[in-house]
Amino acid sequence: MASSTILSALIISLSLTEFMPHHAIADPADGFTSLSLDRSNFVIHKPYDVSESERYSFQNGIHKLWVYSADKPFMSGSNTSPRTEVRVRGYDYTSGVWQFEGYAYVPSGTTGVSIMQIFGGASAATTMMLRVYNGALSYYRTPIAQNIYDRWFRVNVIHDAGAPKVKVYIDGSLVHEADGNGASSHYFKFGVYAQDGASDYMESRWRGIKVLRK
Image 1 (cartoon, rainbow, N blue to C red):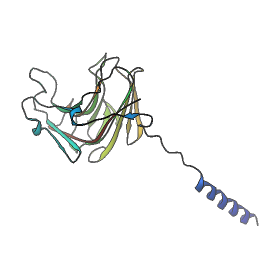
Image 2 (cartoon, rainbow, N blue to C red):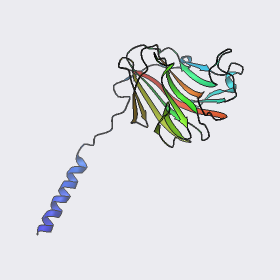
Image 3 (cartoon, rainbow, N blue to C red):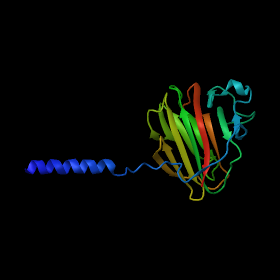
Image 4 (cartoon, one colour):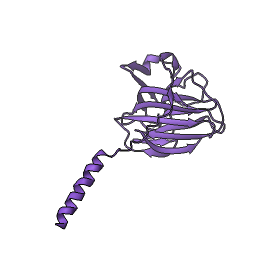
């Protein structure tokens, strides 16, 4: 009799659980407004001595960017490292809460490279960088996500310019929070920009790019 009562209670409990609301994980884009973007907002920075098509392509909604460690900088006379990046134009900001979203793909072998950055800072040239080192994604040099080679992953970066604070989400999960680098005029960039320990060839692909703000 007792066992029958316990079994009945368990069945009722499981039945109630089935109909209880499940709490979904909040999407990092919730509460933000997506801003209009078209090809005119994407400015290509690439080695100055080659044509755009030799380092960048856009097909089927995918930005493909590549660069070699022996390449020239983006302008003659610059002492910066080789890069092929998209500079998002038209949404520079000095205040407010802004967000970059995109889906990234990094082929195995690409290492020692920044694939996304927020340009501008009082104490440094950038407020943040997402770099790849040997298959791990890093916030500058701090690892924040493993095993990112050869797969698409979602990137959301939220910058509260007034705080200043930066949050990084990978595949919808918060993986890193950090202070910003001070007041400046900021904008988003994505692609490949050689850093310490860069591989001979660097590549990243991007799709679904959005700029959002509160």
